[in-house]
Length: 338
Image 1: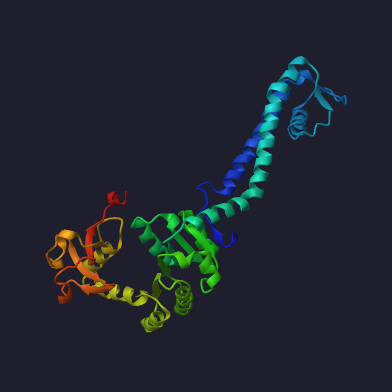
Image 2: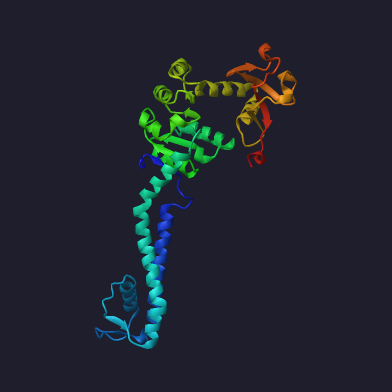
């Protein structure tokens, strides 16, 4: 499980952390060498090779901090022995802490990942699983984050390590594997998710993923993006709740942009949750029950009643009922996110 499921990395990468520790170790080594060199009058070389050179001091610092201690170069004056006790010994301890600490951390990283994964699996519920982190998947994640969804409540499934690294950099939990396999979806917690977004690059893959996901999570909402409209009925039969035809939607916007580009700007504004306007959903308030959705202060686009969507001008929703949900246009600003 640890190989497939990965918790988001710390902001500081492992290479940066390792380089910092190497710098500390070499710093301690150099400091010890300089101390010995400047106090070389208090050291003696038992090999009888004259004064202590800087190379000799560096050699002594190396064998001393690594606790090898061959004994060929030793302090013989009281001052040199005091410096060894007060300064060289703490540097030796620092050197060993860095060396042993790095080794232990590398050995325990797998155990720590396992603990984080187990803790995450015990806590996560009603999260969103995004299958495919290409252009569509990344845009879906950005929208979810813009709507206030916490990064730890989004799980990205993909086979591309580069794409998963990008998702992990945003603080998302990632799963490496083919989402057509039930074992991979189970690792992602699809059976406990509130929604599954299928954003694969191929329509046939989207059908297989939807079939697998629906069998595992019969009550979870599944949203799928496909390239061709002729495959929509296949996705519906496979269990998709919503199907977005990406190619035709983009084509319609292109066609509209040639005649009325301002309309496209408004549509993009409504689909961007960070600023401007956005389409949102809320429950009908008590004082709104019995009234018409067309007469509310909010700009209402539709009414959801018993899991069925009605346009705002539909006669069935002329009078709002308790339990209805309104699709309306709200003001979306950066301040709203906070």
